[in-house]
Length: 125
Image (cartoon, rainbow, N blue to C red; front, side, top):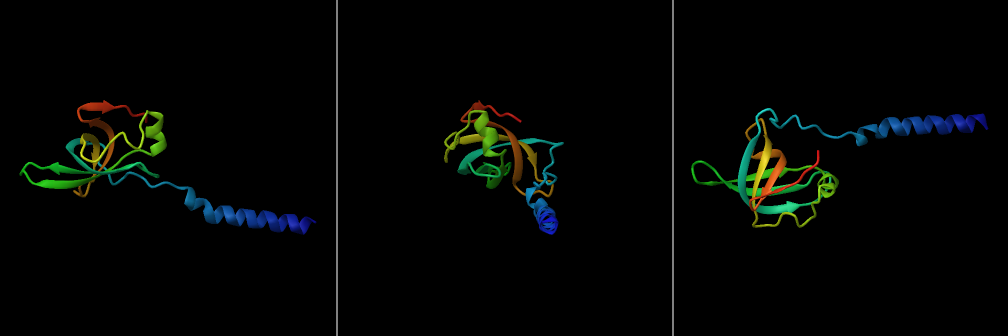
């Protein structure tokens, strides 16, 4: 009986050791949160999905041409607690998103503040 218990404990310890990296979460070290910016554009897509809500916007740059920005937002459960739904932002809406841009110059942002068609949406973080 003791040997079965030891085998079970050894298997459980091995399983926990192997699966622990699956519980980790990626960092946001790619974003320059020390120098936040705001981009305003037209929503191309909005996906209220895990692990982070994703939005894509067309943003007119200083030269007058359009850049496509990928906006990484908080988790859907975080935004849901603040009152958001999958229809809080729609394709065609004008959104001002504020947050940390990618340090390497990509049109990618980790955002935390939003104005949709001029109205600020609440967030809780």
